[in-house]
Image 1 (cartoon, helix red, strand yellow):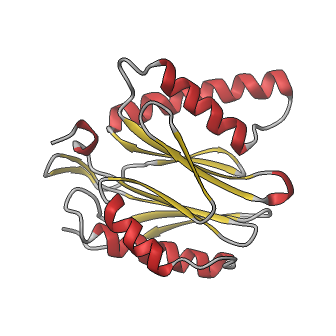
Image 2: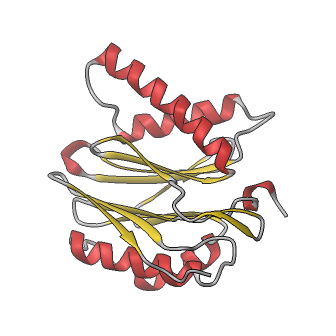
Amino acid sequence: MSIFEYNGSALVAMVGKNCFAIASDRRLGVQLQTIATDFQRIFKIHDKLFLGLSGLGSDAQTLYQRLVFRHKLYQLREERDMKPETFASLVSAILYEKRFGPYFCQPVIAGLGDDDKPFICTMDSIGAKELAKDFVVAGTASESLYGACESMFKPDMEHEELFETISQALLSSVDRDCLSGWGGHVYVVTPSEVTERILKGRMD
């Protein structure tokens, strides 16, 4: 078993019309044994920027703390929030400088940039970015998430339809992966509000 699969995870971000959604499962396991059913994988950097970290749970929390520290320094120096593109470059640089002993994480970054244009991207554990205009996935359930998102996604969805789509994609995908699941956690972000919802899923 790969170290990335040790705790299990499922992460997906999807773009809508001037909005985006990011969702994760809630299971923390040690291989096939479930440890917690309310584990947080999605973190708020600021009102229009969210970060999801799949992979090893302990590395995810360490990396998140480093990124919050660097973002606060940026806010103090620049007196503004970081753009999603800038933050993606920061995450990539932090991962790449540890490339010989990497953080075992696959980040998913989602945010609203200039003119409230949604930005999503993911990267591997050494910071190689993959940009997308529709959706990005990460974690142990990524293969089934690709299939569900490919079939369900359509461009320019409004925020309610986007929530429905990403939720159905997540729930149907984690049912096909025994290392992730136990409900879901969904954020839908528009220029004016952030909606957070907890999904109930199969508890096995």
